[in-house]
Each structure stands twice: as structure tokens, then as C-alpha cells.
Amino acid sequence: MNSHRVAVVAGLGLVALVLAGAAVGVPLVTGDEVHSGQPAPAAAPNETAIQPGAESLVLRATANETVRGTTGVAAGTDLTVRLKSTDSASPFLYTESATVRENGTFAASFDLRGVEENATATVVVRNDTGALANRTARIDASVSAESTPEPTPAPGTHIVHEGDRLTVDAAADQTIRGTTDVGAGSELTVRVRSTDSANPFLRQEPAVVQDDGSFSVTMDFASVEENATFQVSVRHNGTALTEVPGEVA
Image (cartoon, rainbow, N blue to C red):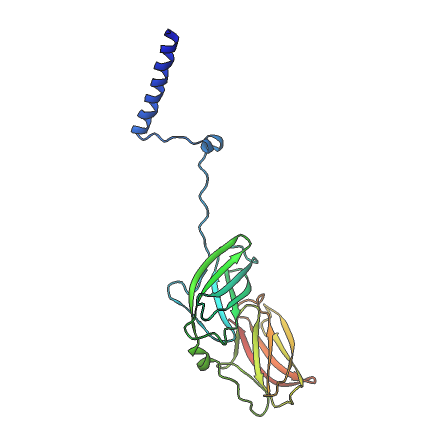
């Protein structure tokens, strides 16, 4: 009987100690902290962002509209950039790959010609672990007609570009277009050669002249550094038909 009474009193004393500790703010120790000696570390913040950050994201309905961003993911990592319609009346889905550059930037180009004016979409950037960033974008189809007019065939051979040089993004699937008076069905060679000795590269692709005198090729500039300069030429049977300077943006 006495031993039972002692046990009850001891138990009540332990409860009183716990309540007293809580009252003065003594933290309770969890099982995980007992084993590790430290609380579990907090997850690292998501450092991936789709640019521009502060402004609304508007994408042009052009053949080479580029989605750009920055990330804390290691350079050389392959990302997937997905553009999916949020409007059931105008459904579309585009997926392109992008490689993280040394400076932490990435870019993916999409052909948005034919997307309806003011269509909305969600842009999602992913890697092997899952989604890293997402934003809502609006497609501005009115820009397409102003900034990328259909090339009008003219005598000679011409590469379509704005200003005094051709500009491409440091990304895959960059399209170079032009017009020529060489006969339809003829095969041309479009060659891009670096003019920067610090960043040498050479790209070359065949192009077939269409019935309307136009031609185009797609090239991969993902591994080329930004601001690298080059000379692009169009050749037929070994003869250069035209040349223009260019730059990787």
C-alpha cells in the first residue's frame, strides 16, 4: 500500500515538472533532435525565375519567341520548359529543352505562329526533381505581323534580319531564313562561322529553295556564349551568294 502511494506521488511530481517547464518556455525535445543533436535543416529556397520578373509575361506569336530565366541549378543541367494553354477554346502545348549556362541563365525558343490573340498559357520550368518555377503568360499575336513580315522575294539572295546584323539566341532551334532567285528545288548551304577567336564555332545546314523563293534552316546555338559574333553565308554549288554579320544574344 505504501509503495503504491509513493509511485503515484512520483508520477504527479513528474507531471508537475513538465507543466512548469512549458510555463517558463523550456522547449520540448523531439525524438529527431535527440538522435541528431540538431533540428532538421530547412529546405533550400527555389532560386529559379522566369524573366522578366517584375513585369507581366507577354510572348509574341513569332517563329522564334524565347522564354528566358535564371536559376541556381548547376551549369550544364538540362531543363524542360513547357508552355501549356489555359484556354480550352485555344488549346496548345509546347515543350522545349534548355541547358543552364555558366552564368546561371537559360533560354528556350518556341514557334508560336498561329496562336490566337490574347491566348493565355502557363510556363513551367522543370528538371529531374520536378517543377522549379511557373508563370502565367499572354500571347500577343498582333506583334507577329509587325515584327516578322513575310519575306518578299527580290533579285539575288538575302538573309532576313533586323538592323545591320542577324541576331540569334544562345539556345537550340534557332531559325535562319532568307529569299533567293535561285530556282525552286535547288539545294543551298547555310554556314555560320565564328569571327571571335575566343569562342570558335562552325554550324552548317542544307536548305531547299521553296516555290516562293524562300529557304530556312534551324541551328543549335545552346553551347555558344552570349555576345559571340559570327558571319553567316548562303552558298550554292560552292559559291557564296550572300553574307551578313551576326551575333548571339
